[in-house]
Every structure is written in structure tokens, then in C-alpha cells.
Image 1 (cartoon, rainbow, N blue to C red):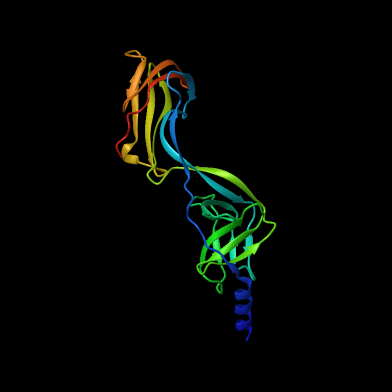
Image 2 (tube, rainbow, N blue to C red):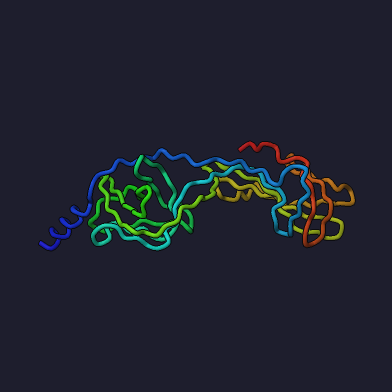
Length: 229
């Protein structure tokens, strides 16, 4: 009898149906830093040159754990949630796959979870089930943010300054694919400034103006060649 009553409460709490959309596309941004011909400095361990692409994703940040529905049908933990779509009245989000991302738990009696819904212009957050039923909570504290992340086919190349010993400087090359370093494509290179004050690697060309064991001042003449992935 008690179990039947609890199930009735949960069913009654799933008010209304909603059609969800996955129509959001994040903004892709190309990276090429620093600008060509500009004199810049980098400290030891700092990035001298970076090229690639990433996306800026609309997201929300839940400032505290939120329970929605009777007995906490769905529980959204504190963290970031990325937008996946919207309609005229609502936005839909999923947990970001990162250490700072949120997490969704459901009670044993709740229907399987589908997505998080945020009502536009309100501080209301809902959990939507696979049956498109929803349970909501008002007065939820959250912040709208933009989250940078590498795209699924994202790729970045960087040169790092590793310091100077005598007349030689050390530069580290790193490649990143889908937010993960590619060890086979990492390399440490030594350049003798007595031979030339211009160095090059994978198509990039840099004029060294000053270098110490703490910093380097330089000008990028040419960025990396377009990488073949």
C-alpha cells in the first residue's frame, strides 16, 4: 500500500509534457596567438605560440545541488551544464563532461532521465523524463556563462618557452587533440642563438629579440602550417 502511494505521488508530480530539442550549435572559434609581427613576451613555462580551434558553448552554472519532484525524483549537483537546444519557452541542458561538470541522479522510482530544462526568463529548473514528463523547482540559483572547450575534432599546436642555458634556448612543442595531449607529437627542441636569432618549427617562424632564463621577448613572423590530423 505504501509503495503504491509513493508511486502515485511520483506520477502526480510529473506535471505536463514537453517536447525537447537538440538544435543548439556552439560557436566555433579559430585560435592564432599572438598576432603576427607584434613584439610580445613569455615567461618560462609560458606559451609562445598557439594555433588551433575551440568552441564557446552556452552553459549554466548551478551554484548548489537542486532536487526536483517529490522525494527528489531528479537531483542536479552543483556544476556546469551545457546547452543542447531550445524552443520558444524553454532551454535544454546536459552535464558538462569535466571535473567541474554537474551530475544528474534519479530516485529509484522515477522514470529514466532525459534532459534538464530551464524555463526562459525564470529561475525555474526542471528534470525531463524519457516520457517527456517534467518535474520542476522554482527559485533556483544559477548563472549563465560561456564555456570554452575543444570541438570534437579540435586540434591545437603550441610552443612553450623552457628557458635558456648559456647561448642556447629550449622550446617545447605540444599538440592537443580533443582536450587530450598527444604524447607522440610532443617534442623538446634546443636552439643556438649564436647561429641565428630566428628559429622555426613545423612551419612557424619566430624572431628572438631577447631571452633570459626567466623570460623571452620575440616576434612571430609566421604561424604553424595547417596541420594534417
